[in-house]
Image 1 (tube, rainbow, N blue to C red):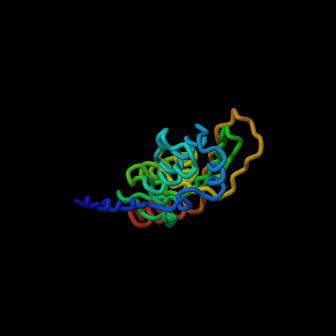
Image 2: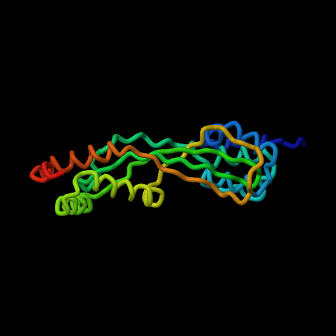
Amino acid sequence: MSEVMTAPEPVAPVARKCKFEEVFDVNFVELLRLVPRNPQVRALILKLAGKLPGPECETFEQLKDWVETHCEKKARSAPNGAGRPSRDGGISIHVDFSETEYGRADYSVRRHGSEPFRIGSADLMELVQTAVDDVEGIESIVEEIATRIDEDAWSECDPSMDDDGDYNYSEHDVSDTGESEVSFNRSDIRHAVLAFVRERHPELAAEL
């Protein structure tokens, strides 16, 4: 009596959410090839991908497979027009963010992104009324909003930061943890405030 052999069930391929190169740039991929188990590099994976591979992922190929099955392609935020009204009728100012991250694996990388900084209508009207009462004009409002952006933009906005693909592997002070900056156009603030006042309170426009 012959024994009947049953073919094994085919294994369905694991669904891929992204390609490795869609999550990390070529320079960081090379860093992963060199030191896939380095804890600082893994911490950077968490920062860039939003998830951390488990300790079972020890080799570059295991990390690559984990990223492609667990992580999504990075999405870029769409640029916002200067002075576009915010949801409550105030204004929003286009702000560009940039930062340099320093790592203990002797690398640094520059990142950049953009996001609108919003001033609500009630808050904006308080600034306008103060400027009118104190006979200070539009420039005092512009400077007040500029100060708020400088001080609060990083905490109030959530820009999608993309690196420029230029990882610098030269030596640097490992005590450095990073640098962050914001930039914006004061003309955008001025135009947005004047447009708001002319639309909502045209009687005050002449006093600014």
